[in-house]
Length: 244
Image (cartoon, rainbow, N blue to C red; front, side):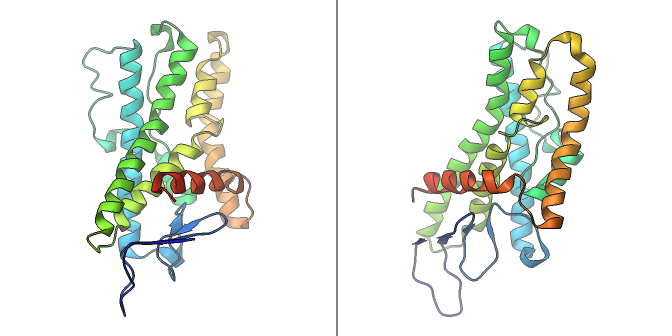
């Protein structure tokens, strides 16, 4: 299925074009760029990669700040909160989380410190605070989609906003994996009783390494372990947001 905003001109690529395939969305026919986007020697055009890096940084920042904001509203108030509300993505970067964007097209920020005992309903409110991250990613994806439709009428290439859309949806969907420091994994570990602090530390240490390892194996062997199950959800959600 294709959605076009203007007729393709000779020698130029169309300003807006989507082709839906079984597990990916190619934004411009004849090019390898797709959603989910994973950097590869075949698709490392300068403008595409720069758009990807910017989109990943935005996804990291909005994910972390949203968690902090909701946690504060629900009762985990910190005096000053300088470690939370600074909107400087450099303070939110995690080495393995950033590496995962290059390996798998999604990643995570440095774990946001949330203190469940400060909540009236610790386990429930912790879930709401953690879910705020991927929900914020989806909201940002919707804003990007609106800008895509605006730009298509100007007969311009909406590459940057399509990348913001794709990266944020991919990040939100993959945070459903039950491994820390992803959303569901962080919530599950956070709900464990205090008497298993050692287990919590082990899970928080192993989780990021295991995630990167799984997707490295996928890249090296070209065998889907997780992505064949989540990529279709990414595609469906992008199609829903785009309205096609």
